[in-house]
Amino acid sequence: MLMTEYGGAPCSDLYIIPETSMYHKLERILPNVRKPARYTGGEYNQIIKNPDETEIRVALCFPDIYDIGMSNLGMRILYGVINKMPGVWCERVFEPWSDMAAALRENNIPLYGLESGDPIKDFDMLGFSVGYELSYPGILNILDLAGIPLKSRDRTGLAPIIFAGGTCMYNPEPLADFIDIAVIGEGEELDLELIELYRRAKRANWSKERFLAEAAGIDGVYVPSLYHVEYNEDKTIKSITPKKPAPPVVKKRIVQELDKSWFPVDTIVPSTEIVHDRTVLELFRGCIRGCRFCQAGYVYRPVRSKSREVLVKQAADALENSGYQELNLASLSTSDYRELGALCDDLLDWCEPRNISLSLPSLRADNFSMELLDRVQRVRKSGLTFAPEAGSQRLRDVINKNVTEEDILSACRTAFAGGYNAVKLYFMIGLPTETDEDILGIVTLAKKVLGVFKESAKNKNRGVRITVSTSCFVPKPMTPFQWEKQDTPEEFERKQQLIKDNLRTRAIHYSWHNPQVSLIEAVLARGDRRTGAVLEAVYKKSGGLQAWDECFSYDAWRSAFEEIGINPSFYAHRERSYDEILPWSVISAGINKEHLIRESKLAKQGKTTPDCRQRCSGCGANSLMKGLSCDG
Picture 1 (cartoon, rainbow, N blue to C red):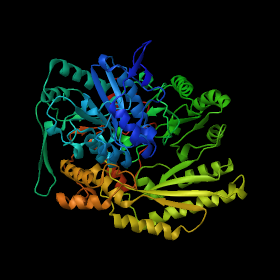
Picture 2: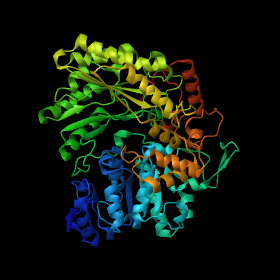
Picture 3: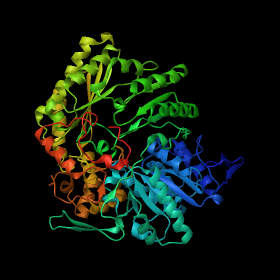
Picture 4: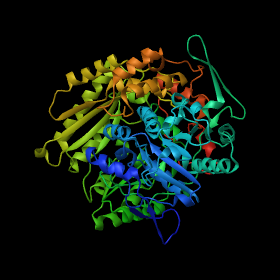
């Protein structure tokens, strides 16, 4: 029997999870699958409640494997927040690897919650955290493994309600047939309101239809079934009409004051290695920069920061409770935190005596300094990554990166002089207005960085490793580039080969993203409801783990497009006009369409927009603050 403390409320007793035939079946199959600890639960700080004293059971689902999902800070926050609700028990569910999925099906074991081992098909609500498009088939895999009908229309009862949140829900249309509700924005408060409404519905024995109608009245809730979509003969959208009581526009929800928001200082400590096996400290949400390709930079606006005092306490508590030896400061642009230097000093005063290292990802080349470098490597030296994004200044201005070549070289010079002999440089290819000259600029810049090492390295005899990585541009909703077209896979491959042919030095390593994967990402990012049939066909052909190289099947996607009669180029390779109705037109991230159009036009002129702290660009996000000030 598994004995675990009764979590979520003070209790001196232990609740004992009874042994079931499912546990005996798991004992037989777990020795035959990779990393069986992914599927056993029982980790330190997991929350166990007595099901007999639980009114609402929620499965918090991540449509990828345990190693990825347990590295996700949002999952950890929502797990803790929901479990603080009286009478509500939230359990974790992750998509199993293909070997475990096959074993579950062969042994007729329905997918279960990690905490209780109970089948999630019997839960009241399933909430999915969706952060990248290729995890969509994973949602279908989880539903199927649980024995839950894939389509919303086939789930006629009140339970289970399927809802989804995360960055991808700024265009939920490809999932419209499968989910009941899309949660738009940050979920700490919104999810609780939705669960509380479900509690009312369950007590009063509401129908599913009534619950969804009532849910549509909650700010930030989008109910796909309450909107009717019509199409033109050219396959563009003619109209999106809300049915009563659905609102014409669903605006995202945000947490107003991060200092008062819940943070998981007593988070679950995994029993097996995960991707980010460390304490993650969120400094702020939002971004002041306004890179025109970056969806996160727009949808997480406005900027809201935590105070230094709160961050230091949260870090100390989280490290004490977990035993981790690394603290990662996380935000979209960590070096833009106003008191970063003082914060690092405060944290190092606590971390250094305990031999805990401090890492700062998401650093910008234009505010990197020797002083910051000294702080980062006081305990343990970690890798350095900079993102020039484009090879020429002209193209960096187009995307509004606001970083110069000298900023990049100066940052690398500082790093090499400080003892570093490795640096990663991230670029994006296929950006709007890009030419071969811009592509060759990537090669030129990388070689200049190599030259900087030879000039300024502290120890030239150690050698240098410069990693150049290129991703493929994917036009994303809610950005100034949402109307742009994507390069074809063939064009991406030509540009990648151009870099390979001209980057011939052992000191510089080149890695690149699969253009076929990027095509699918673009189709799903800008897809409408018709692409849902493709998702289902791909899932049935090739399974759910499409975000993994060893599982991704371009043949399955291509075959599904042909069977359904959908041309992927219509979604990926077609430029849109500003007045076209987009699939996500009824969703608002709080950014004015006029601002996005203005930024799009400035990009075409190669003109930049200053960051929010230099001058407010009038994007509209401040209107979400309800009287509080934005930290931009």
